[in-house]
Length: 248
Length: 248
DNA sequence: GTCGGGCATAATCTCGATAAATCAGAAAAT
DNA sequence: ATTTTCTGATTTATCGAGATTATGCCCGAC
Image (cartoon, rainbow over all chains, first blue to last red; front, side, top):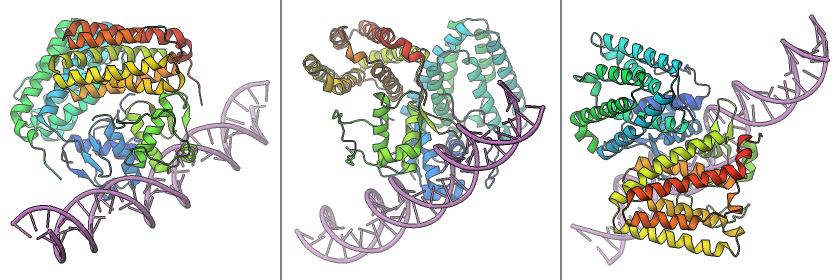
């Protein structure tokens, strides 16, 4: 149920020819992670075809292994597979982004409310710790922004996951996780990291404080605003680009 | 996004040795459907191991094809795959059933509200048609209950899908569909079909009438009650059995 | 009598080859 | 000029065999 590719040590840049499996127990999982990374960061363009023969040489795995990894990605809706016409990177659109955003608000607020209601001391500690880790990397972001982008993404995800970690519903966490990945893709595709005039840090802080104060209504409202602002920023920066996905 | 194995002509009993693909465009999809059917109806016991070598002969496909089909089923959370220890039928538990039920109510009511708000004449027509088809098979259910169980399941699903067909959110429909399958498995496993003293027909009618009258609040409430009653019936009949899943 | 190590068995996982299907382009017919 | 058909080439889908890993059992030691 839980994320198949969790615990990834986002090491920024990976050696292209490296055959180190980075903690993946099987080659399928290894290929799955690598493919997902490449889709999320935009190296594999939305809508483009995923030719097995071509990817075989690039990822150094057999065709069956590759197909299995691609099938796993269909679950996350990051890859589509149609009849006898092979796999494609899932297309993007403004309409889908809007849908993802609305559903995220819907699920995220519910998960947050349940976490606030059920959370114990360990949950609070986890939230504070994740916030601290995120803040640290944000401080350093002003100096050398480039190589820390992946690190920030990782810690941002960790923070938001820590917030809802105490939510008892596995299904809710599962669906929320899928949508978070979708949203992460749009965020990276929009190159929103290049220009963050917005004070995301303050938003995170406000959400955390509301959560720790057990103010569910306030936390939910702040979380919704957070998602909404991210959405607005993405549409402003790259809204036109999302409307016309590149073809392969 | 939409259901991979839609449009299945639930023909009741399938020839075990038959190699007719029943509308599946690829062998993977064929194996996927057959596996899902067998998991949903309980032929493959929850928690039991899915040995590829063994299933190869039964489903008449190669190992790679089988693995790919199983990977697809991981998406629906009907199969789990752990490290180097192969695939297993997803386990069941009372806790999971409760989770599934709560999330179903949460998503189902939202989808229904949106469908009621957005639905046009075609949506209304689809609802009425699906209700009619369901009613027909329910009439015949009193005479020869046995062979019509699968048919009833199919039309029941079609009815509930018709109700929320006008919901514009693909993600909401997608998640709802996954949970419906989960719920369907529990329902079949509980053998609830053997004893339906409950007047499901009246509940369906009430939901439909509220939806067509565009009374969103009433429809949502009725839908919640509907799911809750199904849950209660399942727990009453087979609650103890769900607590201790069989091992393979 | 119980625990730990090592071997045999069995299953998973992976790969390259083969067959089927789709797509693009050119030639022919209307 | 437009449509249709045919052919070649690329890609997908599938399979069975081989390498790698987990599992169960036996035996010896304590």
